[in-house]
Amino acid sequence: MKFDASQHRCTIIIDKNLPAGLAMNAASVIGISFGRMVENLVGPDMQSLDKVNYPGVIYSPLPVLLASGEYIHELLTNAESDDEMYVMPFSALAQSCKTYDEYGERISSVNSNNIELVAIGLIGPKKK
Image (cartoon, rainbow, N blue to C red; front, side, top):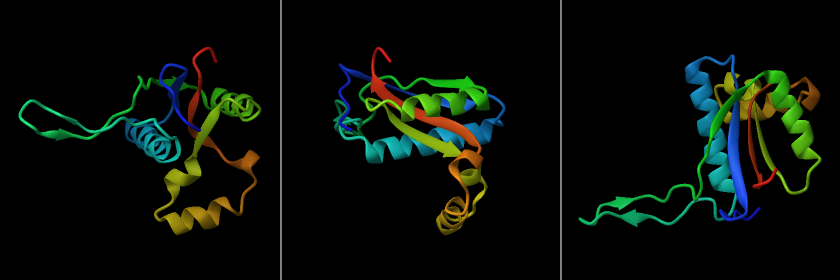
């Protein structure tokens, strides 16, 4: 997906029952994945008057909202059936792993409908 701030919006929705540290972790992981996977989401570096470099940030606001786990699953189902939406689900399983290899082994042995989501990132047209 190529992000266009005049056409698109993005948000992260986190399970309202997550403790603060895990909620911050979920938002951070989704944000990093967005930056890696979505072209043109992050702007160029900027410099202050005294030439201190400030790395590029996201081109548009990024609201972080809270919802129930059930509603997060509903959002995933709706977004996956919409070709205009980019979806980044994040699971409790991912948060429970100590290494990326462990994550890969564990997630590949579970059906997706049995994976508890703790957050979801969505990017799509403004109206949606």
